[in-house]
Every structure is written in C-alpha cells, then in structure tokens.
Image 1 (cartoon, one colour):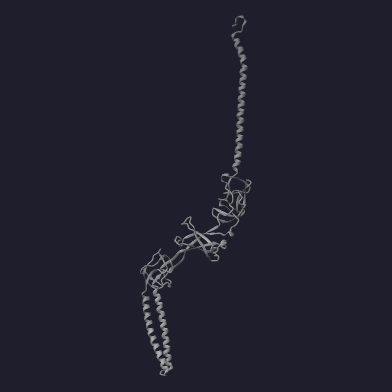
Image 2 (spheres, helix red, strand yellow):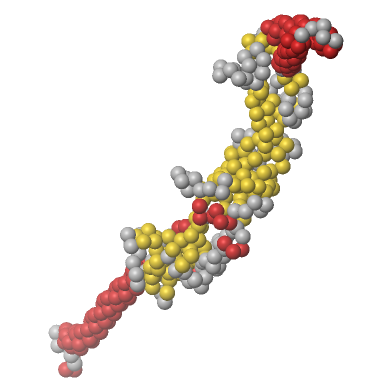
Length: 406
C-alpha cells in the first residue's frame, strides 16, 4: 500500500532498517572472534611456557638429586685413649692341694668349702692303727737296743780295766769294745726309726699351711686315706689364699717393650660394671710364646674383701707410656673403604670425593687409629657408598657436619 502524500511504505522502511543493521552485526562478531583467538593463543603460550619451566625445574632438581649428600667428620688429632685392654685370668696368690702323708681312715674333718682358715688351723684328723702299732714296736726295739748297749758298755769298761792288770787278753778287750760300738749304732738306728714313726703319726692331724679359703673338700668321715706319695692318692682339701690375687694376661709382641715391672695396671670385670681395681705389674716371663707371639705378664691386685674370685675372667688395662704414643689421628670405623688396592678413606676436596690410601694402627672397635694418610683438617666422608670413585661430585650435609670424630 502506498501512503498518501508520496511517503515510504512500512515495508520499505523495514527493508531499509534491515540493510543498515547487517554491517553492525558483522563487526561485533569479528571482534569477539578475535578476542577468542587471542585468548586461546595466550592460553596455549602459557601452557607451553609452563611446561618448559616445569621441565627446566625438573631437570635442575634431577641434576641436584644426582649429587649425593654425605656426612662429614674431621679426624680426631689424638687417639681416644692411650691404653690397651687385654683379657686375663684371676688366680689365687697362693693355692695348693692338701694331701695326707699317712695311710688310715678319716676320723673327723673340721672345715667345709668356703670356710676361711688361718695358718695352723686343724683341718682334719686321720686314724692310723697300723702306724700306731709300728711306733709301739719301734719303741720296744729301741728299749731292747738300749739295754744291750748298757750291757756292752759295762763289759767294755770291765775288760779295759782287766786288760791293764793283764787279766784279759787284748783280743777280749777289743771284742768287747767292738760290741759296744755296734750296740751304740743299733740304738741310734732304733731312735731314728722311732722318730720317723712319730713324725708319721703326727701326720694324723692335717693343718692349714697358710691363711686362705677352703675351695674343695674331697673326703668324709670313714674314708680310706692314701698317703700323698701314692699315685692314686686323692687330695683332702684345696686351699686358696685370696687376700691378694694374681692376674695373668698375654701382651702382644708389639707392646712387650712397653711392659715393665712396677708399672700400674687397672683391672675391670663384667660383674662389676664401671668399677676399676688397681693393680701392679710385678713380673713377666721375659720370653715370647712362639705359638701365640705374646708375653705372659702377672698383675697383682689387693683383694682384702675377697670380691675378686679365683678363676674369674677379667680385663687388664695397660696404660701406654708417652714414648709409645704416635702422632696419629682416629676416624670412625664406618669411614673405611675396603678396595682391592688397599684400605681407603673418602675425603671431600673442592666438592669432589677423593679416595685417599691410609695405614691404620690400633683398632678401638668403633674407631680406628690412622698413622698415615690423613690430617686433622681433612673432611672425611662418613659411610661412603661402595660405588664411590675419585672425582665424584658430592655435597656435604650441613646438619650432620661434625667438627671432630666423636
């Protein structure tokens, strides 16, 4: 429909408005599309960049982790102690088995094991009927011999007087004199026999030869007793003097020149932890045992309270004199590396591990003495890996850095 007055129709106006709106819509779409592309590009860039940064960081961490972290210790300038500790055996200062010196039967015993006795104490009594009979017979023989001697002496004196007056011949006088001398010898023999049997009878009583402790009793009342000279004889008692004890220890040949009589030696026992008994080296064999290559040394220790028991296992601490001490260092045993080339220690120098050959001295268990190859200022690596080689890069762990061997 055409409006009056020549104006545009409604349809024409709509078509014109539509044609003016199309360029506006196209420009907005392009702007939005461009923003999306830029955003996508920025996201892609950031993702790629983030992965590059992560990869770089991972490579750095991997590189850092590839360098092993180690603990460091400085060698100790002096050994931890200046003594050697050797095993020893405690023995009584005096010790003896006690045998009977006469045959018979045990009448009574007076002390049992663990009893403390004094020198001269009566330990036991033995009944010896045969020895008693032999003594009575010997005394009777002595009396007979003494009677014969008296007759011979009287005859000799009478014949000597008669000879002076020529009443008897010289032969009679000489015969009576010879009989007198023979009877004197017989009397002396009988007296000696009586004394022997009296001494044998005195062995019926068994006495303690010194102060000590009865450590064994091997008889009882009524037991048959054989004299000690008999090979089948059995000891009646075993007596030990423990007021002082002897401790024998074997000193290695390398230290024998350091052992001298009169020097102090301390003794420890497992049953008395933390307690030290003071003794003195009194003597040695002055000869090296060719089998063990050691020198046997005796250390005497006062034992008034009897705490050190014979037969106990002890440790003898021998202090080394100053002349035996070397200018060495000590390191923990876990720092040692055993290689086919010899003993080595890893030392940290300018961030690199260096395997240093060493020579060790004494072994202290948790530590060892190094007599050559290390200085107190060296940074020794603790517990190194078996695969560690020269010039391997390592890093010290600050939290475990130790100033000296502990």
